[in-house]
Amino acid sequence: MIRITFLLRKKPALSLEDFQAYWLNEHGPLVASVAGRIKALRYVQVHTFDSPANDAMAKARGGMEPIYDGVAEVYFESRAALVAALESPEG
Image (cartoon, rainbow, N blue to C red; front, top):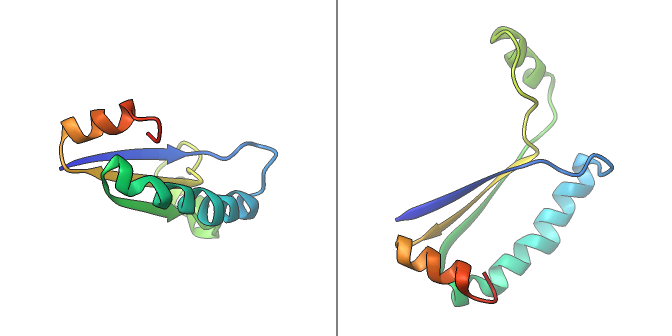
């Protein structure tokens, strides 16, 4: 099994709320609509939430890179399946 992981940052002009709404309601359904054709086994969105805990964790670790706005994962059966997906018009 192959898992592709995308660490996402929104465009600076976009609010986190607007980014997440687009990602969930527009991009997610787009991926779902082609998942069968590209033979993606699974698509996962992990949405960041803004919390004072984020700053506290960064401070406890002596500072960190800014948090990502989300993480996406796409799973494929094999490397060959991933390559075929990327070479397809839908991919």
